[in-house]
Structures are given as C-alpha cells and as structure tokens.
Amino acid sequence: MTSGSIGGHAAGFPYDREFALGLLADMLRIRRMEEKAAELYGAGKIRGFLHLYVGEEAVAVGALHALDRDDSVVGTYREHGHALIHGLSMNAIMAEMFGKQEGCSRGRGGSMHLFDAATRFYGGNAIVGGGLPLAVGLALADKMQSAPRVTACFFGEGAMAEGAFHEALNLAALWQLPVLFCCENNLYAMGTALARSESQTDLCAKAAAFGVPTLRTDGMDVLAVHETARAGVSHVRSTGGPMFVEFQTYRFRAHSMFDPELYRDKAEVERWKERGPIHTFSARLKALNLLTEEQFLHLDAQATAEVDAAVAFAEAGTWEPESDLLRDVTTPAGEAL
Image 1 (tube, one colour):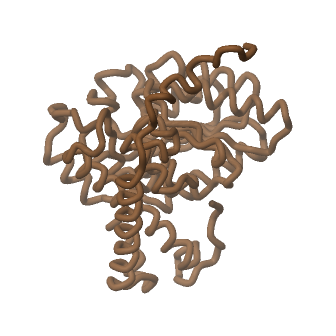
Image 2: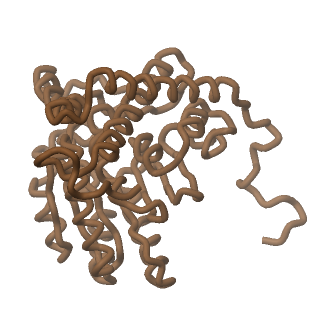
Image 3: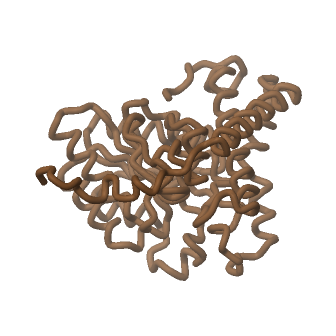
C-alpha cells in the first residue's frame, strides 16, 4: 500500500499511470460496495446501523496508500472503505454486514465493528472518539517493542469535542508516540454543524495546542490527500512522534440510514457533489490522456463484479449456531481463569 513512482507519464502529474488507475479503481470499489450496502439495507438483508462513506472515498484511498501493510489502522463506525483498502476482503466485509459467521468478526459486530488482526485493522468503533485512546495504546506498544510501525487513527471532527481526543493527543505528544491522527472533517459530525458544537472551529489549532504538528488538505482530491498523508507518515516515521492531519471532506449520504437529514440544505449537497472525488479525478486523468472512457467503464465493471461476488458469498454464508452464543463471552467450565 505504498506510493507510486515519482515522475509520471504526463507533464505535471507526479505519479505513474498504473498507480493513478489503482487509486481510481479503489475509490470505485468503495463507492459500489457502499451503494450496494444501501440497497441491501433497504431489502432487509443488512440490519442494525449502517453508515455510508459515499463522497469521502478520496480520504481512505489517498491516506491508506501512504501506509505500509504492516502499519495499524483504527477506524470509526463509517469504516467499510478503510477496511477494504487496508486489506480486508470484500467478501469478509459483506458477510459481516449480513451477520454471517464467515464475516471478519464472525457476524457478531456487523457494519460498525469490522476487525481483522491479520491486517492490523483494529475497528470499527461505535463510540464517537473511542478509537483515539486505542490508537495511542497500539502506538505505545510498538514504541516499547521498537516496532517500526505507524498507527493511523481515523475520526470525524465531532470526536474532537470528546475528552478522549484531548487525552489521546496529550499522551501521544507527551510520550512521543507514532500516531497519525486523521480527522475526516465532513462539517456535520452526526448532524450538527461544526460551529454549533465547538467554540474553536480551527481543528488544527486544537491539535497544535498539545504541541502536535498539523497539516490540512482538500479531502475531495485523492492526490492532495495522498501527498499530505505521505508527508504526515514521513514525519511520524522519522521523528517517532505524532502528527495531526485534517482532511476537509463531505459525505453525500445522510449520517446513517436512520437519519432524516434535516440539518443541511439539499442544494448544498448538490454543490459538493460537483467536487465528487471519483468524477473529478477521472476527468483529470482523461485530460492527461491517462484514461479513456472505455477504461473507466472497465474499472467500474470490475468493481461491480467484485461487489456482486461479495454479495453472493454473504448470501451463501451461514449463521452462527446457538451453541456458540457464549463463545468468547464466558470461560468454559473447568478452565482456569
């Protein structure tokens, strides 16, 4: 999950064509997976809570491609895209959303609790800000074991009003821990505009108050995200200390499938859609002769085929037997604690 080679095939474009098409393909994979999830939710196949990432794909794709596979990632409840790009299979993600035991959390976690130790993807956290102290703990463990890892922690701007944010930033700065704090600022948290919930709306200033260096970038531009994330990761690796990055983005769908979305104007959403990360990046690649419409349609068809296969896998999955209900919950009789 590293960056493409510098010095690309088109003037003024910093990466090679293969890497650029990979970024586009990954954004399409997330978009088609999320759209299908919404459809399946409406059909009653996916239940519980469902928070979609439509519109924010550039952040997960650009940032995660700046990490190594061995780095750790902590997400929020809007984490399907992060899990997919960091290495979880779409089959395991879809089966988890269906509640099947073939899912990455054996169907017990559902949409908000994707987890996979093998890929070092540590959630999926339903509590706002809940992943921040977890990320600090992972980074502390790496530092104590001299493991050359970065822990990337994704959270929304709403989490910055939580005490966990301040505690996590304070300890990461105090102990100089290798955490890349990735704030996905989509302006509305769960449904309240930033200026209505936080007295200090300069998010970088809040992080800088703890002595943590900061960066800010356009979260709708996958290359801007990638360049900024690379700079942040480089800082963390070279200094061993934390970095805060604000990705200014926007979700096109409501907060969750239950959200009536009464807090923002539909015209505002449409204006932001004009800056959608997939069509703006594909248009840029076409203008540079790095992509044709036929190639775009091929990538889109591949993403759709992957989604269809994942749905089929989930449909064919099995429910966890009732006899397993206490598995990993209680200690079997006779076993020492």
